[in-house]
Image 1: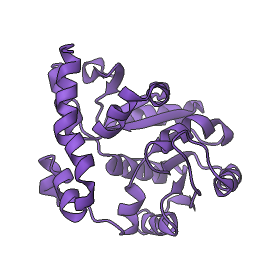
Image 2: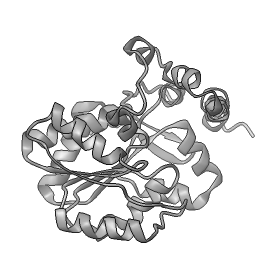
Image 3: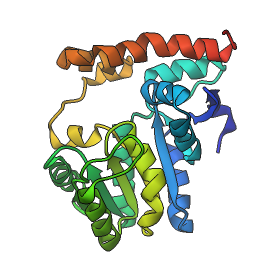
Length: 252
C-alpha cells in the first residue's frame, strides 16, 4: 500500500487510499480468510475518539481508517498528504459491486425498521447477481452491546454466512459492535461501519447533487434538509479543522 497517502490525526493513522487500493486490500483479506475491520474516518468519530479513550482504542483496532469527509482531506493536507476521499456510501457501493463480480455474499445490519430490507431490495435492482441478506439488528449502545434482537440477528448472520458485512448500527456503537462481534460471525472477512448508507439506499434520504459532493458541500445539503443537525455540522466544519491544525502543530 502507498504510505505516501497516510497521515496521523489525533494519534491514529489515517489511510487516504482510493478505490483501487482499498479494493485490493479487501480482495486480499477475502482470499486469505483474514477478518478485517474498516472504519470510515470523519470529523465526528475522530473528535469523539479524542475525548473517549475506549472508542479511540476501537478505532485503533481497525485495519483501515479511510477518508470519509472533506474535512479529513484538509487534515491530510496539513501533513503535506493529498488523500483520496472515499465517502462511506460510495465505498459500500464499491464493495457490493466487487462482491457481485466475485460471488461474495453481502450482509446488511442496522437502520430503522424496514430500512435494511429496503436497502437490500435496492441493491438487488442495481446488482442482479448480488447475494445479499438483511437484518434489522435491534438496538446497540455506545459500547457495542446489543439487545436480544441484536443477539438474534448475530445468530442468523452466522447461518447466512456473509463474506462482507455492512454495519449501520449508529455512531458510536457500530464500530464498537464490529470490534466486539466480528469474530462471532466466522464467515465475515470484511466488516465496515456504513452509518446512514442504508438510509440512502432505501430512499429514506437523498444524497446531495454530484456538484455539491465534488465541492465537499454534502454537509450543507444535509443541513438544509435537517436543520436540527446544525451542532454536528458546526463540529465537523468549524471545530474539527481547528483541532486538526492544533494537533498537527502541537499547539496547546
